[in-house]
Image 1 (cartoon, rainbow, N blue to C red):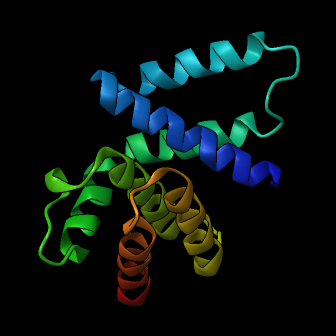
Image 2 (image 1 turned 180 degrees about the horizontal axis):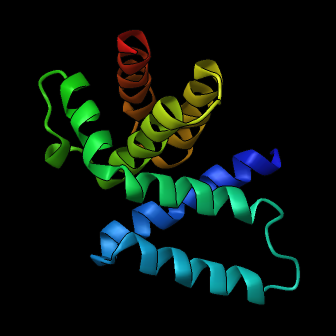
Length: 135
């Protein structure tokens, strides 16, 4: 797994755990940074994790608006927290980073395959595709 993929996984973990705990993203990120810094071998892409989580946090209203616009027969509140975290991460990358859309989709699908339900990858792939086409 590449360092960037590990960083996306770590950012997903921060987004998901913050939601599950009802914790502000900045607090969850600070906790993560403290734990990571204390490790003997911290993640080499810690800066990318910080960029991703802060990017989602700073643009959450717009990200959720774009997601809501591209969800067919679903609302953001009805999504599983895992799917919501993956989609928020992918949407931030699509809207605010230079990461190619194909790479964003592949990374989102990898997270969905690992953490989502049986149909998560297909669903997330469809939403990411809709957002990509709408840009």
